[in-house]
Image: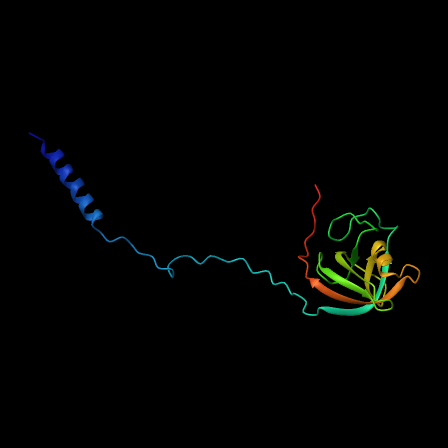
Length: 155
């Protein structure tokens, strides 16, 4: 025969399993869950203007081989340009209004830092646009594709 105290403890164990096993499971609604803080969305203003007019200049020897604002090495013979506010890596068509020559450039640097100028072209771009002898040119700038404004990291 099973002793009384063991019988009572078995009955108590079964009773507890029955009571807690049949009880309601708490249900949670989305209102009960803690609110997650979402990352603030990064608002980027995409400039709306797609055509600009102004005076362009060029730069070359003094900066050849140095890092540009987007982190790449400046090649004065390449087809790149510097602009004060356009997102880096923006692709533009630049037309010399005096001779109608045009070239497609990518913004990879900041500048020009001379009052009254809108664009600083690489030496290579200035050759293609035909204003090396003059030093500056009246230009029309058309945005082909807005850039991602990303800095190129070098290892």
